[in-house]
Image 1 (spheres, rainbow, N blue to C red):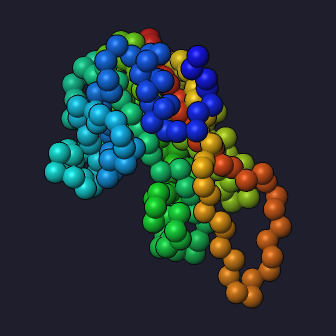
Image 2 (image 1 turned 180 degrees about the vertical axis):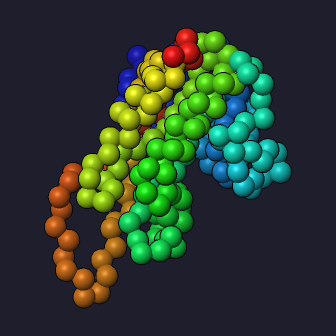
Length: 203
């Protein structure tokens, strides 16, 4: 019995593959250092805007080097953080580890542009796995997984399944010396979503 909440990312990837795909994953468009695939076979094509490994193809997720309707499956694991700072320099532990966007509308633009490009290259009934996380930005709650489902649906990517990955460890929020004690206003988010989309008819 495959359940929707799993505590291991690799188990989620294997579950999605078993339920929704005939073959192993074909493309990862944000490969990074490959830790996403630790203990698993890597996809046939590994892409990243700044390749860190010799086998990785340099490519942006919004301009993929594939023909229309030519790819069976794609994995997308983008940054999910946004910042409100007086400058774009952001040196927090989380920023260094995951990267991020300056504002939520930049995240939205990147996600929407990638969804359109993925729709272009996926074959009919092709699968996209989209990892995302809800965030609090500028003191507002953004349900990114709901937004992403809506953005995808607008172009013809149908939500087929969804998995939840609770975090095993969380990096504590740093407190600056002399800073007032922070008052919690939202529940702490400690889980990510794996959204499974299938390419349907273009809208």
